[in-house]
Length: 265
Image 1 (spheres, rainbow, N blue to C red):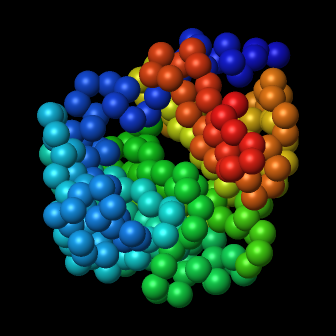
Image 2 (image 1 turned 90 degrees about the vertical axis):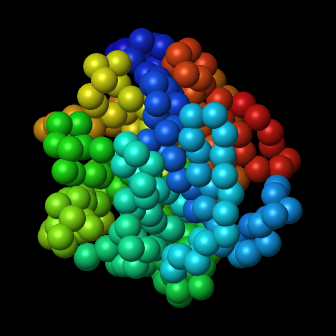
């Protein structure tokens, strides 16, 4: 079997800012709705937009509808205009309101306890928008949620497919393509994504719960490949003490951090 570490070295580049101009386009906007103003005394509102251009950032108060706790993903066009966002509970379109068929992400006991309209999913790195590898009108939302009101373990990796041409160009979730499982397995709620070396496909990385096993699935024009498993050389990460996986821009280094009392791997 090809080692995942070898795959990372030869095939991966870190998603954020891994190719020229990326931060000025698809990842240009970040929405804040929880404890805003901690790093900019000019912003005291409870909601704000952090926007990047080629040389700096601006942080401005905002009044969008979507509340956030920890889960937060956005997608912008190449000019930096916000197209869609999610807090793990629902998807907003460019108007800031619910996208057509964009409500009810992963409904279960855990989501019900957080998706009451005043907050969002309290799990970082569990949502990400990915452009379809071969159709510029389609976008995949990769997402996870907890299992029950007291259990943060995800039951698997899921996708929701968005067609940007629906609803007069505001976009909408494709009928029958919401909350679809990529694979079902107990996972730590954490997703890392990297562009394939072919410049088209996407690698999606998740971690088995209470373990040191990671899974890599590739999103291609034909869909998702079966996940490749790799046991990494560190102690199993306890459930509910998950953190964030990330890769260096050249794909040669992998890091994982989890909660206090444990440390950086």
